[in-house]
Each structure stands twice: as C-alpha cells, then as structure tokens.
Image 1 (tube, helix red, strand yellow):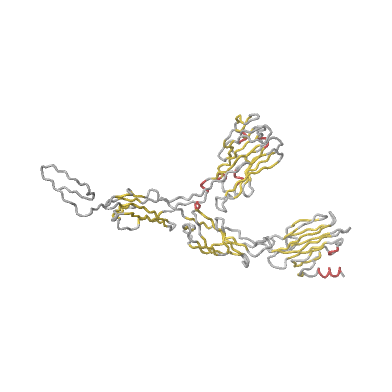
Image 2 (spheres, rainbow, N blue to C red):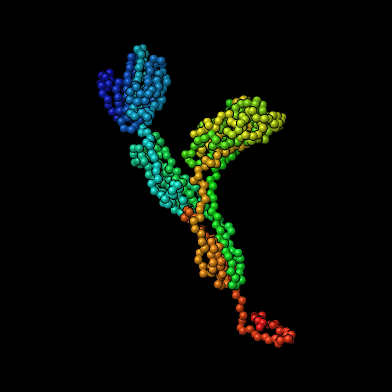
Length: 547
C-alpha cells in the first residue's frame, strides 16, 4: 500500500499543510512538516532510486528552508544534490553523502521561485537510515527607503536646516516599501544620542553645533530579523544650531559722566565659528607580549565624517603614526585595518635584532622608551631601509631612526573603506623572542575631505541700538548719548544673524547729580582799588560770582 501511495504522489503537484513530505518525483508546496527519505520516518530509502523533488513555498515571496536534523547514506554511493531553484538546472548548493549532513539550507533572495530542488540517487546495493529535515519558509527583507516629507523650519538652498539654540524643529517622514509597510515602526535618531518614536518628531537642541538626523524604519517582517527588516539608506538631514556671537569691544568711552556731559558707545559684534573637530583620537598603551604567530590589535574610533563617507583616494590618508618600542624587528608584521576589514601592510619582518625605539632587552616586561614611526604615501623610504641609531637598554643596540616612511603596501588598498568606524593597528609576532609596547597611535586625514556642512560661521544680517531719547547721534554702530537726568542709563545693542537668531548686549553709564544751591546767594561787593577779605565760614552752599 505504501508503494502505491508513492506512485500516486508522483503524478501530481500538491500543497502540504503541516504534513510529512517523502522523497519522490514531483513538486510540493510546503512551509511546515518534515522532509524524509522515501522510507519515511522509519526509513530506510530504497536501492536504485533516482528521484527529483522540488519543494516550493506556499506563499508568494517566501523562501524554503530545510534544517536537516538527521542524515545518513552510503558513503560514496548514495548521494543527495540540492539545487537553489525549481529544477536541476538551478545553481547547486552541494552534494552530500555518508554522514556529511547538509545542515540548514535556504533558498536565496536571488532565487525568484523560492524553491529548493533535491535529487537523490542510490545504487543497487545496500541502504541506510536516510534523513529527516524540518521544512519552514521565511520572507526575505524587502527594500525599505526612508524619506523626509516635511520640515519646519524648511531646509535652506544647500539642504541644511538652520536654527537657534532651543528653537523648535518638527520633522515628518515616511518609508517607501518594496512590498508592504504594514506594521512598520519609525524612530528618529537626532544625532545627539536621543531618539524619538513615530513618523513625526518635534525637538530642539540646547547647544550650538551640527547634528545629523536620520529616520530609522523597521517593517513587520521578523523572519530575517527579530526586530523587523530595516531601511538601508540614510537621509542624513543636517541641522546647524547657531553659535552665540562675541560682543567684545562693545562699550562706552566714559562710563561715569558729570551732569551735562556726553559720551560715545561703540557696538562691536564678532560671529563665532563652529569648527568640526575631525582629529581622530589617540590610542592607549598596548603590551606586545612575546608570542609565536600571536596577533595583537589596538583600535581607535573615528566618527567625525558623514555616515556614508568613504576613503576615495589613498592620499586622503596622510599619515599613520605609531609610538612604540620592541627589541626585535624581525618578529613583527604591522598593518593598518580599516572599519570594513580592508588592510595595508606598513612593515613586514625585517632587520632581525634591530630595535623599534628605545627598547628594553632584559627579558622582563618593563617598558622601554617609545619612538614615533609614521607611514605616508609621500615618503620615499621603507622603514626596513631606514637609518639606525643607538638606543635602548640592556643592552643599547641599533634602532630604527624615528621618522616618516613609505608603507609596504600602498594606502590604495584602503580605498573604499568607510571613514567612520573602528580603525586598528594589527601586529603579528611571528617568532618566540622579545616583547614590546605600542604606547599610542593615530591617523591623520586630509582636512579638505571634512564635510563643509559640519563647520559654519553665522553671518550678521542686522545690528542697531534700540531707540532712546538721549541718543543724540548715530554713526554706523557708534552712538553719542547725552543723558537728561542723573542716575544709571542703559543702552541695548541688538544683533540678528542669518540663522534668524537675535542677541543683545547692554551698556550702562552713570550720570552724576546736578549741582544746586539752597536759597539765594548773598551779594558781596568789593570796592575798586581796595583789598577785601570775605569770611564764608558756615555758608557751604554759597555761590560766588564776580562782576
């Protein structure tokens, strides 16, 4: 009866719903159940089989996956070949026999059918238990593109949003989905360590600077990623937050006036540059213990370029500088490794017992004195061909002269690397003798490749003194003031920049009291030609005039 069932199945294609699928000729649609050899769960398969079975997903857009939990055939005699597609003309995943378990096999995204085709051939003598594989399907990630739909304030002609500190910004965005956006989630990354959920975000920045904002989207497909499939693009919306200008130089010629005097007050404003600091950090100390084939790494993180910016020219990496000591240069290979794993050799084993730096060669782990070795495409000499000097201790010996040298491999090997990310110096200690230290290392990139939008200086668009009745003259940003009353008089200098930000500086002066007399002055007369003495004791408020 079992054989009759198998013959019947070979005549049709069918859809299996959580049922077992036996090896046979034909096509089945299934995303669940177990795939067995022709003998089923109890096995074994039969001799002289030559069967081809295609397993396809039961939903369009899905991919079939087989997880082989058991596999045993005659080694070199009974073979299974798995094809990535709906026929034996499809690309081959591999051929398996004996105990060579296929493991987990999944149709790939470039396989338009989502099917797997299995061919099994057994010879005429002997059979073994066969196999069992769990059948499942998964939906590959669709293409998801995030986009900015609206922004308040709107971007300027260069595409940057310019705001003042604490000014409210509202961004709205959406996703373009290859198939379906149902269940998608949205998160705005504000570029300052903060995030906001949802398609619309309203926020502000308290400090001046440049912030790169992105909209991160996850769809509802958790087959490929438990968090959902993510967008692969970056909108990289640049937001520049204005710097506060300096009012140094603003002030009055005289800050204390006698009654009735005048003074001038100068208004001086100087915009403040915000400069993108793209100096990579300096690493810490790394011990290089004695090893045979051991690999040591020391890494720094670069994060001051645009998120998708690449090294496009070898000369954009000006220097790689390492401060180190080691007592046997013949031990070492030194290379630079970029964030995506591209690498270039800086130095390879040479020089035998030549030191790096002022090495300590007493066999202990006591550090010697580091020396700076830089590598640049502008240099002309390899480090292995450098002059030597006497340096180090226990004993002092020949040591490569510090300087800038040509790397063994061109920095062209690094072209295409992301600029942002973890850059590493990797050392291979090839021989079991001697140790050393890297005390620090760093990179220098061409400053011209720094994104221009990450630095800015606001431009003053208007400047004036607030009106005041005591201002008697205005020349440019200088006013003349004549306070009408005694006391403190303050004047406000008001400035606006091209970000729309307004700043003020206040200058105050003191006007002294007017001099007044109590009552009417006495009239004292002197006769012509005669001397006269007047005693004014007791009359401090007297006003004396001569006529």
